Image 1 (cartoon, one colour):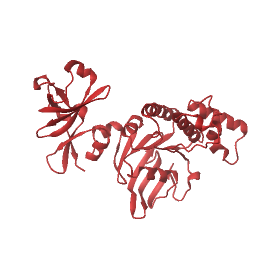
Image 2 (cartoon, one colour; image 1 turned 90 degrees about the horizontal axis):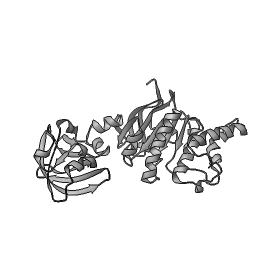
Image 3 (cartoon, helix red, strand yellow; image 1 turned 135 degrees about the vertical axis):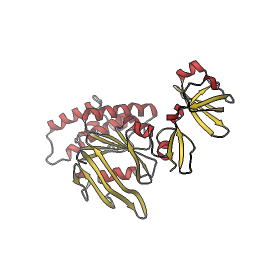
Length: 339
């Protein structure tokens, strides 16, 4: 692929008898924000470490900017990596942490050049005024910004992000997702993120690769993966979904809970639904902007309904034990491979 900054060609990585990555092909475009999404043990971090040069493929090749990186050590690759726990030097100030990579260069930049580059990098991550602080004097979000500035000051072709938001609380994690997205757009560098958090991957990425047991199962835009998953695994991992028996044992029917309509009676349901089902409400979970109902049908079994609060203002809420009518439009039901 001509515009690929990183490319995997038939890459396999084995640790003894265990295949962590299996025959993967992947092309990461220049300037793209790509996420590799999957559960623990799926091979996503091993893939990242092969890009960084901390691991070498057992088979296949890794290319960066068109150059085969076989045998090339990490320090000679045009990539930088931000780790989950940031790996800041506790005895160094923010400025000293940020400038560390530049100070290892030969020839070493002048003191004036270092100061200018550090000032730009610190401003990029909005940490002006914190230059003299040590890492223990910073919040988790500020420490992450220092790690980002230290990586970006070297102007890598690719920034590799290994679960960088996992240690943050939910509110701060959401704020940093927006900041990362804006930062990537501002600097124009290719970002490659690995995460097990589907919300994180979907909210920030131009493209997402879903991995399972060492293989890339599906790759596409967040909307493509959410609206058109190739199988049950992707539909279940990317968002929530209801699954019902399909026409054969090899297929299942998937319906997203937010596409299920619920009303007090069949007559109150919207027109155009493909089927109506009388259900009993088992649980109600208040989620702030939405309410999630778990309902049960005699033949379909249990499934979820997600309703926005604004729609409840007109139809009301349902209590545990209530009988309700549900249904969905034909296009909401996807026929998927079962595995």
